[in-house]
Image: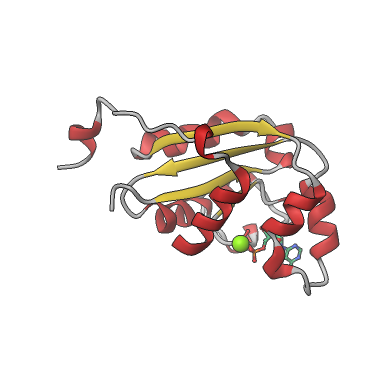
Length: 151
Ligand code: DAT
Ligand code: MG
């Protein structure tokens, strides 16, 4: 429904490469509503928890080091089908498999420098939003454009 939310983060490479505005822009232009946004240096503990499902992977430690190598921009977007749509807008995990027009397809080439994160399911979105944001950091607001975005 329109109350669906997802967690998206611009990774340290995206911040360093000044892609934050552009990534925000894509989600805004699509018609999703921004309900949470912050620049932060993620702790190793937070990142290990965030990527807990990948703890057995050979690239896990490397991934945690990359994700803690600089600030990230954490955001929560709300809208119809936003979890699935955000993943589509990101492209495939490996930028080599990502179509032009997707964020990863347009802005990166290396799987371990893939610029952006997006929750992969409604359950992960719920878990990740709770992990990254306090309740009072999520803002419920009426968007004036809503009748032009939804019938
Ligand atoms: P996604 O970020 O598309 O949800 P994932 O959850 O499988 O992908 O993996 C999390 C991140 O880990 C991914 O964005 C980049 C990194 N990663 C995934 N597979 C990798 C691999 N084979 N080598 C290096 N890093 C990898
Ligand atoms: Mg994932």
